[in-house]
Length: 520
Image (cartoon, rainbow, N blue to C red):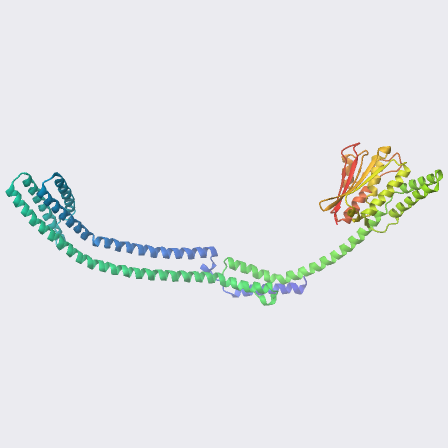
């Protein structure tokens, strides 16, 4: 970065800090984390609703209990009056019939009425209603005694007492019934007034509760609105500036004011720092890309020259011993035989020499490579009296149009002859197969010769170039350069997307070289 760029970046950073300093940063509740603010608002809302519900529930329960108590006395008096009427009826029926069933019913009604009488208050008080209740209890007890005496007199056949008690019981029954009805009416009148008062209180409580709930709802809305604004306003400001930055208007973006140091405030500070550092970063990135582009162009140029040089160098490595031996064999054949075979042989040698030495193309068709192998096998069979049996298996003729680097099959076949079947005579066999596997094309060259040890295979595949022992039959010294040559050129040509495999079960079990290349 230039000196002016550094100064601009420093000035923008200072401007950002000054603007952040000008904006008043809120403290206290505004500086709380957003999670704490949300929890506080939620707890405040729940607390207000809970308090309002508790107050309403308590007051409503209190009024309901009072309403239940208002008419409990009337209900008790109604039950007492009903029980009295039933007792009087059972008493009258028994007096008329004197049967066992009517007597049993009388005792049941008498027991029920006695229980109601026992529940009445007998305390001495100045309260008029309580005095009337005490009188009713005393009259009820007198009534019970009279009807009991009447029944005893009736069962004892004492007609005079029976008649007197019966009449007295009837009068007491009338007084008792009248007193119960009077007390019930007075209580009903008083209770009605209390009920109206409590009903008005309940209505007032309902209105008050509605007002409280409305106020609580408004307060909750206000709290939520304040909380939402405290979160959305900074986010909206951040969104506005971020949108300008995304559109590339860095000069118009400016900075986002920081109102509170909560999570949004911290993100805003980081965003402001990022925006202020973008111009410097873009400048450094531009300079870096320019340097990287220059280096890449230089590297590509060097790699192209290097690849061309390596291909030409590797293609030029032809064994001079082979050329010498083949020419020597041609001269001997011309001496021993007629011109026809010599002409064919010399023509094949010329074709082979022309392909290996004079070829200028880096790639050829697979058909041309296989034709080169046919020529090479022909020359070898002339040299070794037809001892090499060569077979070809082409799965699909279309595969022969696949382009491959030149001179990749002949070195492999030569290696099979020299180190595989060279000492086997007419028992040696070489088979060349071309077939497809999925989307790839496999070229397989297999022999039934001496095979190869795993150590030697690993040495060749790793490119260590360990020397191959001299071939005593031909006098030629191998170095393993042929296979390494093929592997290197295949890797360069197919950008390392090929595979080169050497398979040998063991000594004396033959060897197989498999080249797998991408299909067209």
